[in-house]
Image 1 (tube, helix red, strand yellow):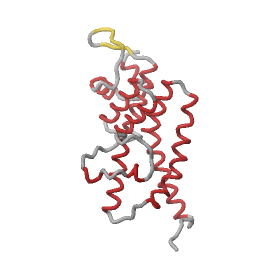
Image 2 (cartoon, helix red, strand yellow):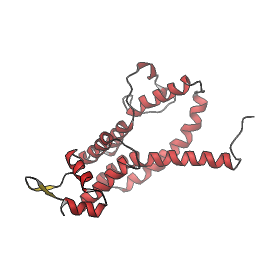
Image 3 (cartoon, rainbow, N blue to C red):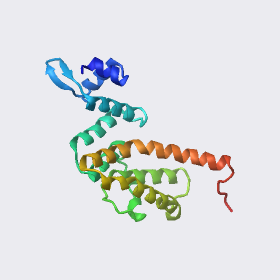
Image 4 (tube, rainbow, N blue to C red):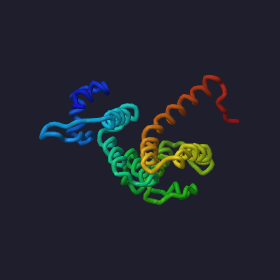
Length: 199
């Protein structure tokens, strides 16, 4: 199909698709110097770009990085790490690098992108005057470890390509779902009067 048909199939405006092509996010099979054809894989790709830049609220650069990870076909663990790196705000402030993951007993390589993210987040909590210690961290770690294990369970039934796609897209697209559910459950607990109170 031509790009105009792709626009009709995906309900994405033609100028937007041409922008994706110029930005290297979408590549058809070239048939002439200024012409390309597209197939069902491109329909899926356009929808994926829309999900990353829309629902996941990624910048174009972040979406491009996620797509590059998918296109590279690396192993699922490396893919997840690279996906995390695309979504993790970079920090070069040595003050925030306190080794929180190590201190809390989380066994990951020190250069894993979320290690610095945790350091920066914990430093921000403390800078705001909120408490942060092992007891508070444990409230989060135990249920999140169960969640992480449940999220990774489907990988065992997938081939390598499916596992990479699931790891990358799951990292990128489920995170906003988890955050929204957490906020909704907070509200439900408060509105229903079931929120725990200090004694």
